Amino acid sequence: MSTSLPGLAARLAGRPGAVALVESRKGLSRATRRGELVGHCHHIARALHDAGVRPGHRAVVMTRDAHDLTAVCYALGLLGAVPVLIEPRAEVGRCLQDVAPDVFIGEPAAQWGRRALGWGRPHVRISLVTGDSPLPAGRRLTTRTPADGIPLPRAGGPAGDGPALIAFTSGSTGRPKGAEYRHSTLAGQLDALTTLMDPRPDDVLLAGFLPVALLGPLLGLTTLAPAVNHLAPARTPPEELVGPLLEHRASIVLASPAVLTLIARHCARHGITLPSVRQILSFGAPLRTALAAALRGAVPQDAELLSVYGATECLPVSAIGDHELRASRAAPPAGHAGTCLGRPLPGVRARVLDADATGLGEIAVSGATVSPAYHARPDADAVTKSDTDDGVLHRTGDLGRLDDEGRLWFLGRRAHLVTGTGFGLATEDIEATADTARGVRRTALVGVGPALCQLPVLCVEPLPGTSRAAVLAAVRAVLKDHPEGHRVGALLIRRGFPTDPRHNSKIDRLRLAGWAAGRLRGRGR
Image 1: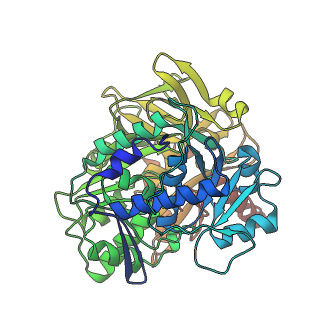
Image 2: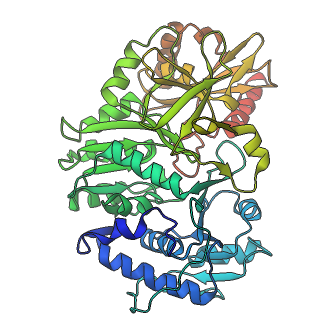
């Protein structure tokens, strides 16, 4: 039988009495043991087969329930079908046009949306509803019934390193694209995460991002899925994060800076410490030293804080601890402004392509963790993928450098480069300096006007309770010490930046630039 998720049966077969997944919401927890999860997967796989799901079918799975997402994706893997994950707030209709799914499995809200907006027409032939809410028209898929002992039909799909999963990008920097993962891609990601986490039998992983619930049990970890607001993570009530973390003694926390900020602030506000935490992995956007310092106030002294770099197409790529991050910020090597991303992980090779005289170019990655292609997007493959002796090389769209120690430095997205008359400003170059100013929560550099003659505008989000004038003065002071700081043509205060829907950490610069242009026009009247 095919197991599209690598080594699924073997990875889940051991320790059947150990807890695989804990769902927590409003103070109530629901645990699923590894043996129970295997039983649920086999029951779901039987139901999927009876509904007509076959090897090679592409099946969109859209639910915010951690158990249902995990069990359904595993069951699809058992059948040799290909789970498809799409960001609920992405351009779902266009994503479904790209992937042409045979199957749509979703909670009632997703099914209502599919019917009302015509998602997946005319491709979807099998529609199944998960969850306990009132149903739209469709067949219910029961997800928590143990297997009845009836053997599954043998999957007749192609052997070898075939498609295992399609994960769509968030679309925060352009149209969402479906990154194809093969069996070897997922296996490479699990190996890389194992290297990063060094999991122990008694570890509990708090998943601050829903798809992490898919990987946690395969890593052998008890995975805690708190009630994160997956449509707006930064609006999650912090007690829904910290309460379960304390109750279940989470030892590893994997979350975006927006979610980690909620945890850090809640702990500081209420004098809470997190004695069980031995490791925090921040992903989705660079970890700022101020947030790292706030987290340090809540965790044991010997806890490890890692800023992890990667993307949907290549995750993870590199990591850096907060102590090295702080040291790199205080004394960067000559010509290496921006944010240090650390060294590539074992098995991952990073290069900088099309570098200028300073070594600044586009970061490209090859290795076992790299998605080999986008689904049905040969245009995107032509721009970002190339074959090398190290396998597929993926252009990330990120600007960066490599220093003499083999560490990557991040300077921002290539698409976000602010180009004025005779100069170009990389966003992370300016922001990494401006964010150190007293009273600043974060900053964002955007360009106003047409390319090659843009006005660089720095938007500043102050900390609550700070003086507007004092914050602007502090930013101007730190920019004076930056060699390109004099090129910033305007400073604008804005309380709250538009961000990506997935992590609430990446700034939506297109919207912010439009707002800045409007403010500057208003000033001129």
